[in-house]
Length: 158
Image 1 (tube, helix red, strand yellow):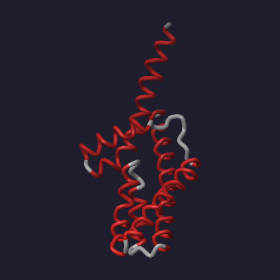
Image 2 (cartoon, rainbow, N blue to C red):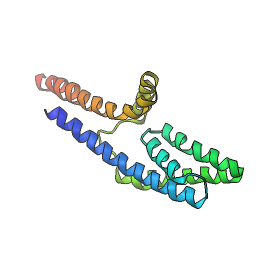
Image 3 (cartoon, one colour):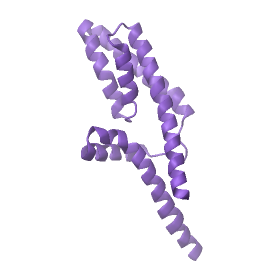
Image 4 (tube, rainbow, N blue to C red):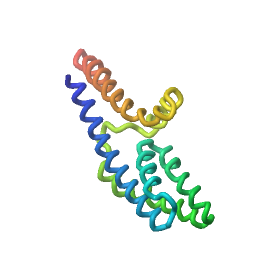
């Protein structure tokens, strides 16, 4: 039961941080695209918040639709949208990222990319959304079972 409680705590912490991040990205995208007069700012803001759930890859996916819409007006507006998304990402990492900085049990970036690739390959687009929660649970189980049970047993035996 203790392992399940730790998994629950890990998922709640992750979901709380991701929720704060997606809300920030969605709202700033709506405001920024509205200021730049790009069509459909609310839809693009919602998509930006949704794609923010996908680490690394989501940053690229969220910028493409509004840039294409802005390109219909002018290439300069598409460039302004790109700068807007770079600014939003910078602010999110600088402020929100520091607020919700992961605990010592956080997932390493290399593991994140590996599991995103693996889950994306086998489960498609849905796998990109499920990769991190499943990885968090797997990491907690491995840490509890292998490190604490097995390795602590070896240390106490010696």
